[in-house]
Image (cartoon, rainbow, N blue to C red):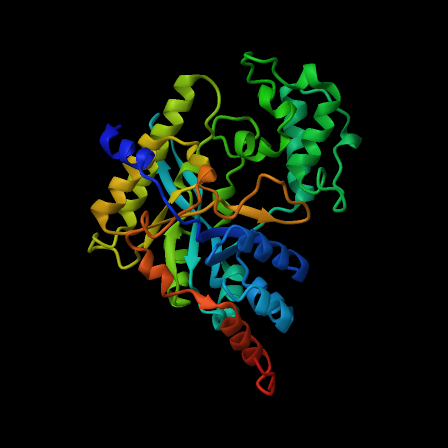
Length: 384
């Protein structure tokens, strides 16, 4: 790993004056939650907001038109960037020489909302799925195989209970009835048990177990997704900019300090492999990325790794972005923020040399609402 301490020191010491960007946000597709996100953005003085829901533009095409004129007036100081986040498949060889498909996410900034049908057709044709019921049964079978102690009837799905809505959560809830048998003690390493931190952080089961190549619960989720090239091409066809999302999030930073260091080493290797493959400077590639998400909570404040990736994107002349990846869903934690620098946001013009490309994609909230209403109903003559 290259040492670029001088650059990291400059980042740490530099002071940024504005919290005016929220370039990675998710929002439940309801009027109530959209207003909740807009209110949070307003309180944080966010001027430009990208909502990047997974494989969906409904927050713009269906929910935004429901806002009243009064709502629009209240949040008129915010510009929106219609965006999406798309899972994709990338073949990667890690530092241990293991070759496998890794699930990556591609952000599509400034996509044309009139291309929603193209997006839907692509999703229907290119994505495979495994039901939550099938996944829960898979987890149960593996759990019994490796000797975890639980009753099958305690592992059930309940769409009305956030703790049991998804298979991984439902499964870990069943395991929590017998902590000592199923979870490591603090400082203990036992591959037949779940990591100690999952005793209280069951939300991390997906990243720490299901996405870990060396874990018994590993699932090749990438195999359910289209290739990166297909996703980038789709975003460009929708007149958007394709950015690699949070390269730091694809490797679990747990275990010993050596394990954590290796995880961050894999982050840099992955970013380098990916950018080399899809750099616009690679003339053999017609499919290319427009940028990389350089600022994100998953970097865990590792300024050396951030500096490494920043150097890579400058070498290849691609843009940079960043955000907190806030999820405004059924529940919203008080620590979730649209733009806080401590969580990877506050991505101001000072940090983003290529920001002008995204700024051109931003649209006044009233203008976007009017465009979508007219698109959905040609006879609508509402005054704005």
